[in-house]
Length: 128
Image (cartoon, rainbow, N blue to C red; front, side):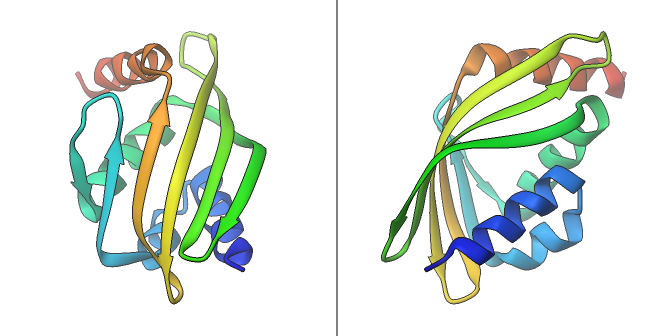
């Protein structure tokens, strides 16, 4: 039901196409992560995604499974990429993506915090 929108969203994430990601999000969308329990607004999330692309090359989402829901999808995936030091990462995630019309209104993301820490550390090193 929402597969085309979700496919477009993840293709934009892989390509680093922040404008397309922004257009897919509802203006008041909320993005939540299990490791910090913070609800991010769209623009805050887009800053994180921009930083992700600065430090992770070869970004690719391997979809393990996707289950359609009336109001969105549940998806399990592995984010693959390479950090500036050459280390390959595999970030295992599960997401509930809520959709209304043609926009994502909420994401609840459950991820491996140890791998996210490696990405965050690399991102902070690039910013300094």
